[in-house]
Image (cartoon, rainbow, N blue to C red; front, side, top):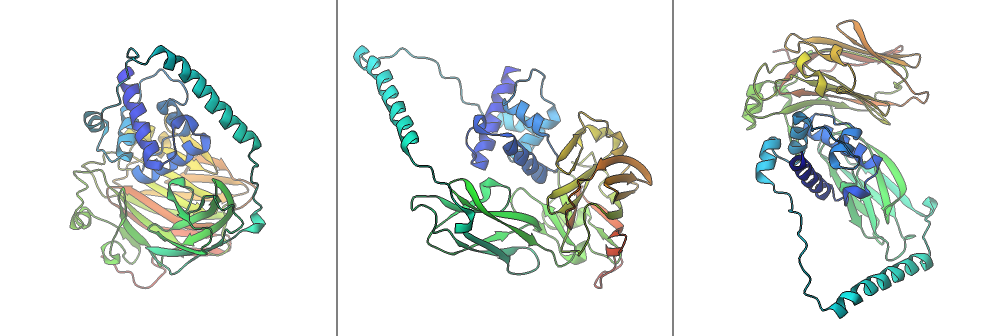
Length: 423
């Protein structure tokens, strides 16, 4: 167990370095929430905040970590699995205390020097005048330059109200690791977005968010991708888009140098746009989906369906019954973890095709699988605008009969646009 703890501590040290967030001891709950979302995006598996806190040592635990969870952490760091991580990474050994060779007179002087430094630091903190910035003194706007992916965003800002020694940065979205330092005297900065979605960019002064702007990075139509740890691989429309369905195959992936039979692979379909007046409190989404990969490195045959809105995603995961412990349901800031809740009704035979319906009405959202209600969630009073759909598959998959709408009618359905083709 102690070996596990040493390697876990080393693992989270590497994660902290990767994200440039500083020591784990300084992290708060929000940091672990962001890490959970980042791991989910990178690996397709959602680890709960409580799990991450336990494994990182933020809170005490005595049980042995789940091997699958360890594999997810290793994958987030770029390793195939936990066993490979352990074989290639070595935790820093505990430093043994050595007998001091410093003269006694200097040994006595050291504590006094440290005490003096602490007193000076405290006095500086007491007498340093804190800067409380007024958001009205700053300007910050953002505009995407095109429709489609990748897409550049032009940020226009005025941060001259910041102190001359202040650190000014622009943050692309929720990930603090994506902060880019800018000159307070400048007025323009640009960034590239490689994934579509709805993002909240921020103007940051000395770690304080002074302005925030929403950015919609839309797609022209359905976008097909092979998800990677760095940049996505964009698929040609003719490789996945047909008249009434979306579909990928192992042959398509192999043509891009990816073998889903040998390596765990995630493929995705995105549709991001302003659908008009359709909100989280009154909508219906219906679709049929199937996992096309029956063997190989993705035995769970999982699929994730996300409904993007202004305040985050609604995320539902389907898998074969043997893997329901690994899945989670996320909606309206609530995470229902499959390790602590019975989500067995989300366990289905993905090789035969599954019908999924999500209906929100009267502040209740009902999730139905094959016309049977499997889960109901409360919907917040404040409605949020729906701005996109994302569907991910372990390996490859097919989506058809997709319809998104509300009581006023259909806002999108597969096959409703020209340019599709039937295989």
